[in-house]
Amino acid sequence: MADLSDLYQQLIVEHNRAPRNFKQLAHPTRRAEGANPLCGDQISLEVELDGDRIADVGFQGSGCAISQASASLLTGAVLGKTKTEAEALFREVHTMLTSGPGVPVDASKLGKLAALGGVRQFPVRVKCASLPWHTLRAALQAAAEPVTTE
Amino acid sequence: MTTTTRPALDVAQIRAEFPILATTVRGWPLVYLDNAATSQKPRVMIEAVRRYYTTQNANVHRGVYALSEQATAAYEGVREKARALVNARAVHEIIFVRGTTEGVNLVASSWGRTNLRPGDEVLVSAMEHHSNIVPWQMVCDAVGASLRVIPMNQRGELLLEELERLLQGPVKLVAVAHISNSLGTINPVVEMTRLAHARGALVLVDGAQGAPHLPIDVQALGADFYTVSGHKMYGPTGIGLLYGRQELLDTMPPYQGGGDMIKSVTFARTTFADPPARFEAGTPHIAGAIGLGAAIDYLHGLDREAVEAHEQELLEYATASLAAIPGVRLVGTAARKAAVVSFVVDGVHAHDVGTILDQDGVAIRTGHHCAQPVMDFFGVPATARASFACYNTREEVDALVAAVRKVRTVFA
Image (cartoon, rainbow over all chains, first blue to last red; front, side, top):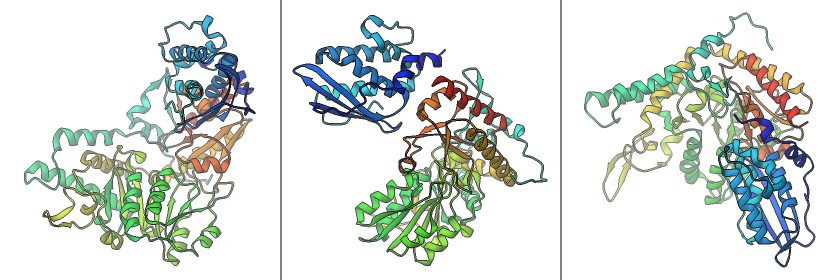
């Protein structure tokens, strides 16, 4: 049975309370907007690319603890990574969020992001966790349209 | 709370009439506090729909055979029940629609496009549901009219002196909710229609939340249009009604074209039927109307005053209990309210509140409640909302309050 402590792990609660890289960048090279209009989660994510590498990343917005913590964890995870590495991480997170509860989470690849593993037991909340990641992908692909995971 | 000598509502008996209330969620008894979104359904209503499909099913207004006559009689019989529900003068002032949203859209399209001119104004209140904003925006954009907003105060009460001021302009129609779905405010519709009519403006009342909680009298309210959703008042989804004053309906063009809404059709010209048929193109939701009729009978069978008193008691108990929780702030504290309590928990998003409550089987609505301007006004992205019906109990308020206290510990 789904357990609240799986969803609201200490790391999630802590990142929600004090989100990392909650900031506007001075020199962003990429920017994307994400919004789930039905539930109201909204995120604006900026990336400063140095060649192919993410030299800085920041987000602003409002939403539930899951979306805010996911965005905060995202910034920590992709900082310093190449676009290809970030895309690989997107796929890992996506697989984790959408796989069945029985599938084990590979913490070696995910690190702190494994804390988002409990979300998949709460299907209506998956879109909250995935919104920042789709927004990052849109930024890296220089997509013009705002993204949504609803 | 007013002291009363009347016998208290037999809530246990009422609960026994709603099959879903006996179900469990994650092993907990269902505590259903999302009645402003949709109410649960009494067995008599469910049975009426089942009986229609089992023994009465035929199309209406067409066949000359017995079954079709019976279906037509049953369907048109509900129109009379609906007339009585809102106390319309005549049965042909009642149009069956899918729900309140379609009722507003019908008036905005049919009346609005015919009567609104460039420079005209339509007023909506600051607490309207999107369904009583967007159709007016669309028609105003199409005809070059302007949409203006009747402001409210921090308690969630409309400012009537501002309405009076706005009515000095070229206002053709005022659209207002009888009861706010996000705040619970009962708006002073009688006073508003009086002010609007004095300036020659019509009034449409969104009765989605009104019909389940209050006896409706469109004549006493002075409403020119009043629209209701069946599913919020113990009836089926997909059926509702629009009341329109006969003189207005008579002059309005059809909303949709099709079968059933004509007097005669040639390729050169069609003559439209009189209201209400003019506005009911195509085979209607017959089963829905039959279910709505059963729901109206159910409502009439209740002691409405006792229900109102019971719901007010739940409102007062929930308001006091939630306000006593540290970090909980109520949104919408009007002097006159229906049994809707919107609240926010400091530092915790409403969706997280909703998920935590759901773990204990407590179903509430979280989000913007299709009232984003209300959220903007109060400076919150979303609220949690508990809304009550006749079958809710003080014990369910206790379950709500206990679960909200738990929110604080999860995020401690």
